[in-house]
Image (cartoon, rainbow, N blue to C red; front, side):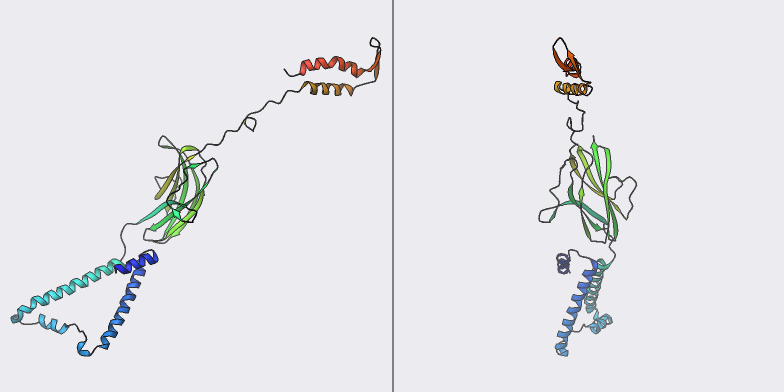
Length: 297
């Protein structure tokens, strides 16, 4: 039977009761047919027959034949022991299993070759960065179980949880002996040097209002470091920048344009003996004043 168990384990990946019983039954039936055919091919005198009548006669023999009774008793005892041993083995195989019931949960990563390994975990996250991880669960509960997985992040300070947020959750249902791998992206939203990413597992949809490591049926976690968001640079939406002071040429241009728009005509200036417009005269006096008042300090 040990050889059959090894073949089933390496062939099917598990040693369940139904495949084992079916395989043993098939082997027994084939061996019985082969033995019956070989026995039928022998002459009747050479065929093996259990000496049942001799055993009965030995038990019923008179007291004078007491020397044969110990041997008969030994034979009967051996037969009973063998029968009990076979019955015990059969019950252990097909009977109800009352061993330890549990589920195995872990976090894996996928290599470039597509192989899942328990290593190469990301240890640092930049602000807004995400990494793909694979959550795996194996059902050893000896029954069909519904699993709910809640992914949380915890900012831990001085061995206490300062902040906790739920990132996502997912569900599945597994029969006994089955394994489920779920690839998903994880993007922390809190920053710090001690951020704990935890996967909380609850059976049969019994999820409390506030999931935590203390009330989860099973859990696994990883410690990571998350960089804080970069501070905005000056002038890039962070701090206001004072507008540049107007230059002297700009002030002169504005004053000149404003004055010219109100020019009523030309006026003679006798002491210069030239004809010039009123705006030119005003500009001559107003420009130095405007520059002195509005010019950059």
